[in-house]
Image (cartoon, helix red, strand yellow):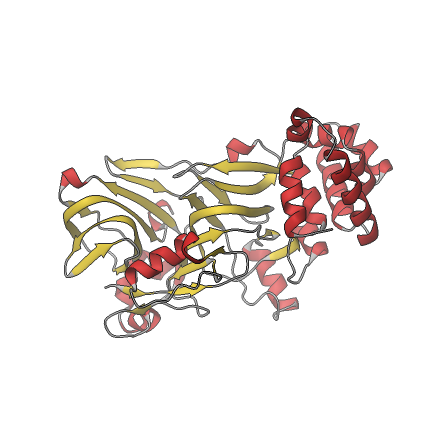
Length: 403
């Protein structure tokens, strides 16, 4: 069944038709008016209460359809998650950096929900991953210790923010205590008084203006300058020296597990996540910051940027499966050339939500084109026919076959 989905206009989204969110939504909803100065940030596909999808033909909530016919979810999904769709599929179009954040584990989410339910609205975890549709920038996970130490040695302003004594102890730390010292450094950075942050950022930016291009690149000057232009005097600008900076190419993906720090910076992506609202923020945001909680819950695991990638497995000539180490969600990328003509979607143990990114064809009575979103019950076999243009689709489902 074809779905009518909701758009979110958060201020960090791309404007007007520069946004893939706006373009896809307009193509599947011709009467949708795109404002050229409106930021179209996210397209939500699922049953989340903040922007629930509806059956396009009847206007009935997808959640109501599932409540009436829970067998649509699949037996494995119902045994693990009850009679609810456990994932949320999104398209993101990012023009301005999102917050420095982490998503709590289930155990910590329960604790936060109990102590502060106004901010942490449910007791569920929120792991997620992003598959790039365009070149996609992000900060994700802590850099290798050696890289962070090198920045600390070479950037006096960073040492001033962290504290000279703490910086020196971190630089001299070894395998026995460097993880504890990293935690101490990061907490000291995030809790630095605002007047010190402002002064050191201005001094660093002034220095960058006179540095040669090689030094500017080595010290992340272009990125820090961009973040400063978006969030002046924000401590999050210094976080670039602690977290991996990655630029994903289309069809590359990163997985962001529980208690791992990250921030999306720019680009368009397919995102899938557990159905939750829990975000602990601490920088690059006007929203509520819970710095102490963020510093407390992080894993402080360090690894190179390329190890943050989630690599797909090949299902057949046209399908790649992105499967994270959690049962809540997985995404299948399906890309079928027009020359093939017809393609049969593999039956899945889980209900799924499928979005067409480009190309066209037909599935039953539904004409598939860019922006079309379809709900597919578990164990159903569908044939896509009349593929007249190379078709690119992403199909989200629960990852129950791995658990």
